[in-house]
Figure 1 (cartoon, helix red, strand yellow):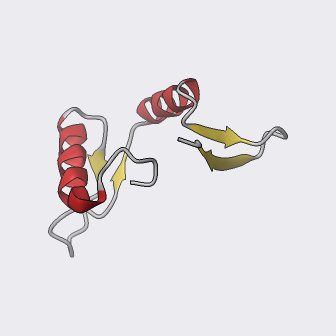
Figure 2: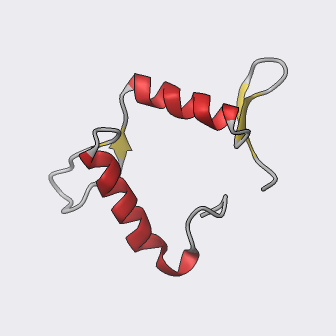
Length: 78
């Protein structure tokens, strides 16, 4: 939503569809909670996480590290 990839008017349904599709492909795994019907969080395997970080850097979507090497997130201007 913040980067403009998902429109706000149908964001909940869009996000649910995306999370379901990523789960089917094995990119994300829902974290089960016995008290909730739907998962409220997801986790991903380390190699998938690394690939996402690599592609985000390659596409210049995020700057994840400061010049001093400290972790931070700076959004793209787009």
